[in-house]
Length: 506
Figure 1: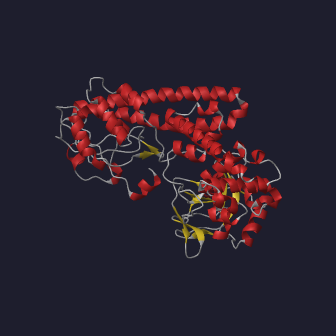
Figure 2 (figure 1 turned 90 degrees about the horizontal axis):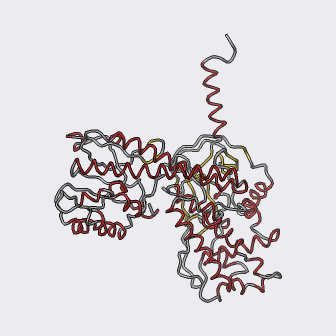
Figure 3 (figure 1 turned 120 degrees about the vertical axis):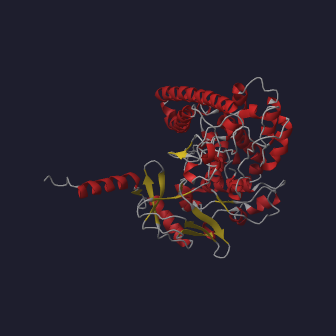
């Protein structure tokens, strides 16, 4: 028998292959991490669970040295390691901030401190931390305009708003920067440039953790909740994991505990929140592959383009959707309730198919354009690859949705049930049940859903004279009843958001 050809050998090879794919390359020997560990130890923090490593797909992160149990403390970072507004007030900047009017924002204070400390170089007490921070970011505000133009329309609009907000932040801060001239031998204009402030803004925006501080009179009334957490901020995001992280007032440490097990030599993740890929790219500068929160946004102009022109209540319904922030809604949120009419339901599916096909064609065209630009614009390769990943993930949703919409073109009585059907981590559309099964109890795995954007398409269901549903969430019942001219019929209801979803902005 050939050596190594047995079942045990095959199992061992498969196990080694899986490990090689997920296991990172240890980077704790690198000078910057050696210095960081020394610096953290001087501030009473020494990690025994994690080591810096580089992973395929996620890049630099933290790897477990041992197996981690559910509920185990993985990091307890002392307050002395955090950069907060208290850190800034105690520094050489404190006097200047205290006397400046109007009071600067907590965000401005932190950004000013970061730029000042980075300029100080070897003289900075925070140099070991500053050395491991990214030198550049991939948030939309940092990308080239021709790359931002490739974004999906809703994301492009938000990216332009972000750029305008940062530019205004810089312009409105120039006088404050000028007041700091006595601290520097060089002109403050050369130190606090737009590029330097942009780097600091992205550092705070992408890496800060939530720590609530007492409100100081020397700061504006904007929320004072930022804290930069050296070493801890090396943890990458995964939507699949759960952790518990918060500042412990008793121990005066920022603590993170696992909510699931983690094997030895695997990357340890935290979850930034249930964000879709457009939100992740906007706020953090990356796209998550197989993101269960991924979605495709349907804007008002697309709704109007495909909804029946015979609907006399169209403007009123669009207005109600706007008032309750359901325009530009994503396909993840779902409705539930009984079918109104087979004819109307089938019409809705036809409209949904048309919209889905429109987005598929648009996405494929954009991917071809990006592919061509990658050949022509070599210097933008990394930025273009990022946007390409976003469109590719959205195409997966659209193709799966189109396939299932096609399967719905069969005799049916559709019942929309609460739930989010997931296939390969994507939000999908599924056919609902019929007859008694539809109205009776079903297992969680059998609950089916249509995305709210597509059910919002069913404006004709609310048409006067039809069997019209009554919406029940957040006062929409009366509003839609008035818009429809009727309150008879079945009982669609929007699923209420949990408190955690509301806080996270889902």
